[in-house]
Image (cartoon, rainbow over all chains, first blue to last red; front, side, top):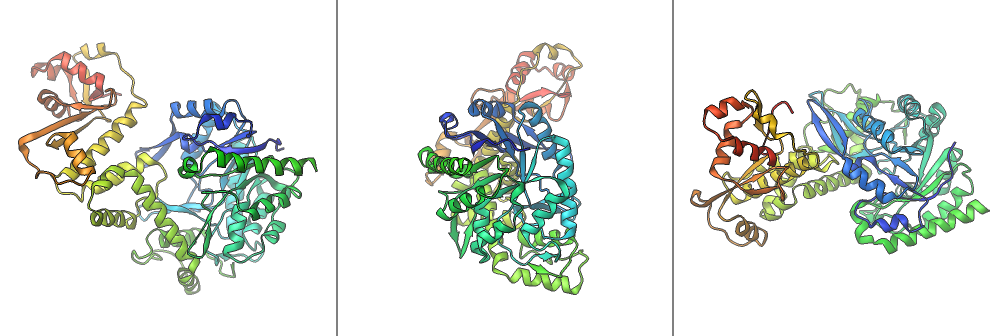
Length: 295
Length: 252
């Protein structure tokens, strides 16, 4: 069961703590890796929480509920997921409990020829195949059991269109639907990613949403992006496009189990974007949330 | 989506990951179990604009990470050298780690191997590396009981977060000149200033004495205190170096 929270924003260490106490936020989305360092341990790599940075994050969030949004699990890697991330998350949960947690549906590691794991450098989309459903479904089930709180997978933005596909799975939303049915996990619906995919692959965003398992949507992301070389990029680097706000209204009216809407901003641009501009986007998200939830 | 080409997930991901990581590096499909149809499918994928764009995004992210990681050293390199180093690094799969410290350590090692030794540029590279290590160590550094060192069987070694950097001239002058791209005197052994970096030191570094340099070299990967005492090293000097993190207890 997803607890309805309202409007959320990522924890970004460089932003003033006042933003998190401004009343614009109902919860904070914390990426655990931002308070961690990586340490080599023989042939394996550990992700260690830096206590001072975790303490700062807790103090900044000032008692607001938190959810966790991971980036390092690589849940779709056929060669194996990043168990160091899960070890870190075990410790994180014991120290700072979260209401739910999420990961990106994709893969970012491959096997190296010497047996080591290689990082690709960007997350890549998982092909919509039965094998992928079985792999990620089983892993999602395991995660649900391990943490005892809802686990969400985020739909990705992708630029490569022609992936191998099994007809019974279909496309990216078919893949997500099949994984949700198999594992019982939820969907973190990133509406800016839907917007990117609709522009880049010439698809109608509303038909993408209509094909998504909206009853499984537990959290929504909105964000801004930019155009490069004929593609709309998921840059998290600016205000939310008007069309994405429209998609938010459309989705909230059809997704009954949404716990919160998060406005995503990249750490690197948060400072230059400024608290005032961020506040405006949060206010807009809050207005839409209130209208849809009251209506 | 391309229905009907049912490639094994591991083979597909390995091929796609290799294609994106190093698109021009050898045969990305080597050692994979693919039939002709699957190979043709991947060849078509490689021609697609979406693939080309993904490679561009990957390269941009990797260059961005590397630039952040070796910021000071890169800023003082000749633009042509800087561009070549970044290209070589990302072509070899560098810049893919999202953890800053791990990326920095590896990248600075990579740069150091490509700089003349000795050179002012190499000094700055080592300075950046030593600062990173000492800073990393400082977040977990705790003063151990100095009385432990009174036991003659106590084993000491060089601190894992300690560093030694040699400047061929006055450090501030060299750094200012490099950052402002001013001409510097050629490297010479005549005016070497050695700086010691340690996680327990306020400000993380200070000039080293000849005695400290010699002691650090002597301690190396491990030596018993009794040996040092027999050789005439003074206990107070050793304790001071423990407090700064230049030297540490070998069992820790």
